[in-house]
Length: 288
Image (cartoon, rainbow, N blue to C red):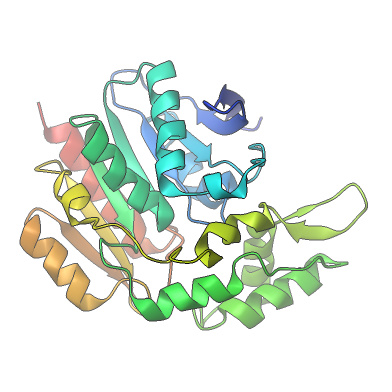
């Protein structure tokens, strides 16, 4: 028993996109989980398996990731196209209200959904991202995304992940790196272990002006007065303490949780992150 159904929807440019649908109560808004830039639905397995039954959990794979189709035009790997894809899914599923949980790029997408489809979010947890993105972290991501190679064994893949992400999870041991590698990589029919995303998602980043972002503060403020949580890794190089404080100043209901000894981004399995999500869901249930 997998605990979820694999389901699909079609983008406006005719890509078949994938999501996992974990069944739950229909008297509560579903939880929409949005992974980070290079990540897929496996990132949210612990969250979804813990909440399923009590909550319906929908875990999306953005175009070019996991079981979602790869785009013919790599310049469609940009937030405004992801937003079109997500809004099409929300409309197709006829979901008037959602709880959003977004890691990194997924958190940015929640802000853009709030700005575009006002009133659609009943609450949101944003994982280690803000309207201002620190240059140091952005440079690290630009260097690493789209540069992975294949590996002959899972241990080789785990060691490769540890080499790159050792600063993010300084307390991880080999079993932790293996578990993370199995989220990041997939086994091909040729027996190679490769990253589970289209390497061309890096191309918009590397285009002239590709790193220049839009002003996300109005999108963040569009989250309004809904229950709102922010999880930040203590060692994060993408979300600074200053940006976190500015977010709290703009939306005072923001419940900020710091996960110790973790960088960008927490996995949401940490006890502090689990408690933050549970507090958010309790707040949503307490509202009329």
